[in-house]
Image 1 (tube, rainbow, N blue to C red):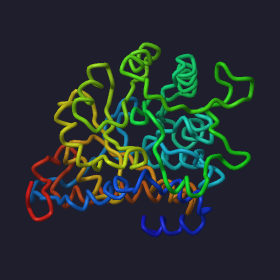
Image 2 (image 1 turned 45 degrees about the horizontal axis):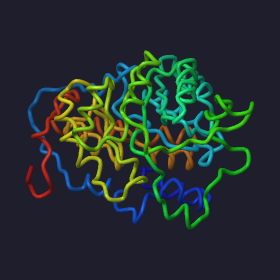
Image 3 (image 1 turned 60 degrees about the vertical axis):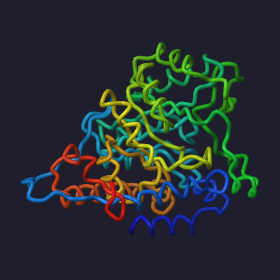
Image 4 (image 1 turned 90 degrees about the vertical axis):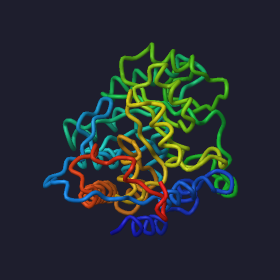
Length: 356
């Protein structure tokens, strides 16, 4: 099945309310739509006769040397898509050599996720996505769980000072998970009764000093996710981030922002090679991966396509998504005359119609 067919199959099998939760975005969903549409504005200008008989598309990421160029971006509540939830996603990502970013809002604990990943591949890399909590003791407890589980990096989401207004969820009245499902990483945290869940808060009061406090509590590399402005990318590096993820939260937070890929070149220039820059939002084809890497990304993250694969075919469906994106990129790299990702350069990306 193609990625488009997997998406359609997922639409058919999912509860319509849950499909809308996964597929929807903020406001009128302009940012959501533009994330995908933006890639249609870019074209690749191949080089020829470059002498690359073999290709190597592996990348070195914090805590994940030699990983594939496609990362599973953090998305919530995988058990809404399939009973095995994040366990199936973890096994699939590990089998395909992809880093999995499991999240604060996972429906399977981080320890179970890493265990599932390492059953599939002993060297599997799992990162933990973290939403900073206004109570530092809660954040620290989550960090300790991620460390104990064997996560190799933390990814701090910074683009959610308040909750995005998502009309589909409001229309459907989707406010709680079905019985038996919960954000399991938020159970048994400081300040809550045994077995109770702690809310995942949004706080506009959080600042760079909170990132500093996090960095002081862990030796794990910390990536900052949700950066669009190049000045914020510079600040992230200055404060000690091990990587920057260019992202507009999949169009789920602010509907007035640009497509993530349109923000990528300026962030890459600001970071100036000091740390890896990743991109997520709108990647739907192997060619999209190639465009993003040519514009300076070290790797790309995919979120919704993984959920469609999970809903349509469980672990096998997720593996199909990751393999198709990876292999599509490898094929496009060959067509562009490259043997490795570094052979892709910004002068090989043009706007449709020929303008750089």
